[in-house]
Each structure stands twice: as structure tokens, then as C-alpha cells.
Length: 558
Image (tube, rainbow, N blue to C red; front, side, top):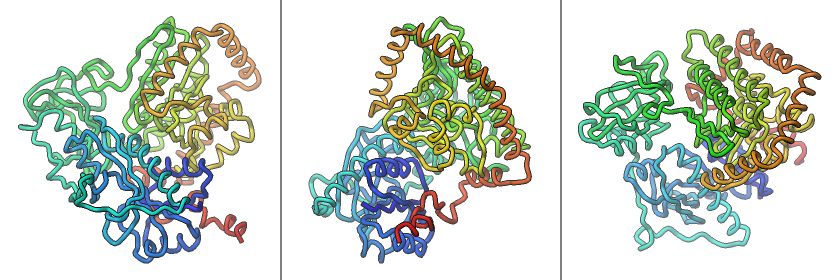
């Protein structure tokens, strides 16, 4: 089918849908919902069999849904209507929630139902649920709807008062609904309110918006007071314990975007070691037999200079342990998204901080590539983008969860050249042709395509639990089966590659290009970074996504 994805932005669900619909053989193009006239133009150019809207913030024009089948992906159970479906589900502590694919009609979210899926809720942020459970359910429901469409079946009408319809019309969640009462709310409710608001819009608390809430184990104090700090986070006491708040936003401050909480507050309270059992733990390490598992869970996958340095120190400690395999696990939602653009934007010199950050990323990547005493694995249970993808490929093996989406490109960030030894790693693992294809394109990539191109070695596991279990089994097998032979072959390959062209040469050449991005006359990187960090709305859809607007495609069609 010819499918037009109409989206407010190319978010995680939209990317996943684009990847999986294409993999299923559909012809997919994308249009950002900027204004009605551009949407009408996109429909005329793309001539879609169906329009799918996985992420919209306003209604589709009537003259479009009256003349074209438009399927709305609503993150709510059957009957649920309104713009804050998932927010309310988290705030109310729903045990089960769902996704409904319905047909666009005059009344928002009230059209005939093509498909629906339900899932058990997890104690997680709205963003995390959206990327995982909601995305899984949405894909299943969309494919069911497309199957019905191909078979000529019809949707069922929504009957609001039917016995099996649990959902109903809900108002938008307002800040008064999110407000934390520090004198009455227990830790669980505080975390629910922050999770239901993370990452947009956050919970307003005085002049600041709160994001990134986590349980503070074993800490107590006077409810509402800040009682400790740990790395980027501040710890605030509740009536029955305490919570870590990792990030905040000051809409009226010098920097109005999300930053580590300790960048906005400097309380005179005890500091708890970051990554300790009681602290705001971003990095942890454990061993199972001959395998060491190094987990790093950085907020939204961004890695600052300081975080890279701490992760490098932890990695070096793991290498000093008597283990045969080191598994780098990343975080639950993201493995890594590369350098930390928010911290760079807030620096006195964005160019200088960019330079420090990319060198810290390169130090980590180089340490992984040069490891001679262990086999290394990147176990990617979460998404990755830009330098995070190539940091993973620095490992000997890259394993992906089936649902993972990769964005192995830098160019959308103002034609940033990139580093992390990608000019060495891509040809080595992917071959020249595939390396050129990966470097050239600006599109998300699914797990299976990444394996086919050599960017990853295997993909498996639908759920996080399935993936984690198989990672453990595969890592144990690497340690047990022909380990000495594999390690010797790795060392020979390292020596051969180094003799042909030293790693230092790849790094020098990449960083020379990056230095021009940071310090050169072309401001494209700095403009693109500003727009990304400040969430400046797109004024047009890039032709890499809007294939219906690419003149080359239109000439071929004619």
C-alpha cells in the first residue's frame, strides 16, 4: 500500500512505524503537520491508499478525512477520548491500558474502531511506556487494521455506553492535576506525577519544572526539603521517604530547557556518591560467571563529558577483572544517543564543550576497540542514535532487541561529520558499499536491517525480559565456547588493522572535520543544536522523509 504518515514530529513511535511498515513492503512517506494547506498538498502529491496518524496534536482537516481513509493511533483503551490518555492512566495507577486505531471523523477520537490492543502497565515514565508498550501495541493494531482494509472488512462503530467499553471522554491534564503536595503525597504518588509528565511538560514546582524522578532508597527527611545531592540529582524528602529528581527546567531562566538538577540548584546538603547504592545510580556493574555486565543508564541516552569519563573509568575497572566477556548494556530506553547537546548548549562556549565531549566519547570508544583481554558485547535493549550507534559498534559483537530503532547518522545535526571511529568501524564491519549507504542516509533503521548491513551481529527477543535472558545465555556461550581461539583471532585482527592504518590516524582525521563543525565559519551545527534543544518546530518536512516532495521520485513516477 501507499501510506502517508501524518505526524506532528518524527518521534519514537513514528520512527518505529516507518521502519516496520517499510520492512513489511509498504511504500511509506512522511509529512509533518505544519498547516492545513501543506497537508492537503502532501495528500495530493503522495496519493495515499491510507493516511496513518501515529502522533498528532490537532485535528485532520475535514476535507481530507472525508475523502481519504485516515487512521488515528490513540494511546488509550476503547472509548478513551482526549489529549492526555497516557497521562491519566499513569496518574490513576491503571493496571492495564491500551492503544486504539480508529477512523478520523468529526468528533475527535470517536470514530469507528479498526483495531485495539491492551497491555499491562509498568512503573515507568510516560516516554518509556510510549516507546515500548504503546509502540508494540500500536504496531500490532495498525497491522491488524491494514489487514482488514486489504480484505475489505469494515471497522466497528464506537458505542460509548456498551458494557465492554471502559474508556470515556477525559479532559486535558493541567498543572493543577500534576501538582505535588509535599506535605501529603507519598513517594509513589510523587513519582507517578513526575512520570506522567516526563518529558513534556514536566511538573511545575514553584519556578521550576521537575523531570526524571527515581526512588531514593533508604533516605528520609522533612517532607518537601532537599536533603542530599548525587551527581546531577537532588534528593527531596516525602512523607514516607524520598525521591531523586535528576533534571529540571527553568522556563524563565537563562537556559529554558532541561538540565541536570544540580545545575539549577546548589543546596548546602550532604553529597552521596553517584553510582553508589543509595545515590542517583547511572552506572552499575555485576558479574555472572565469566561475564561482566556494565550498565549505564543516562537520561535520554545523552552522554556528557563527565559521564563519558565516569563510564570509561568503570569500563577500565571491568577490564581489570578476571572475566572473559564484558557486556555493555546501556539503559532501559536508550543505549546511547551520543554527546550531550543540552549541556553543550548551556556551556559558556558551546564549541569548547562540544570539543571536550567528543574527545571524551572517542576516549571511551578507543578503549573498547583496543581491549585485548576480553571479548566485548554491546547489548542494545534500547534505541540509539548518532555517536551512540558507533560507540556500540566499537564492541566485538552488537546484539539488538528486535524492537530497537537506530539512527546511525549525524548529518541532521547541521551536517555534523561525527567521530567515534566510524570511518574505521563501518568499512570493517559493513563493507565499503554498506558503509557509504549508512553514512549517506538520514533515516531510522530497524534491527533486522542493521544486521543485514553489518551494523549489528544479531537481533532477538521481543520483550526486555526475553532479550536480557538471551543476552546472558549468548554471553556465557562466548566465554565457554572457543574463547581462546576467538580472542586470539581478535588480537591478530587488531594488530593487522593497526599496521595498515593506526587508530590514531582515523581519530585525527575525524576530529579535524569535527573541529571545523565546532569552530569553523559555517554555523549549521550550532543552529541545528539550538533548534533541537529548544524544540523549535520544523517549518518544512525534509525530503529525506517526505519522499512525495523529492523531485527525483516524482520524475520516476511520471
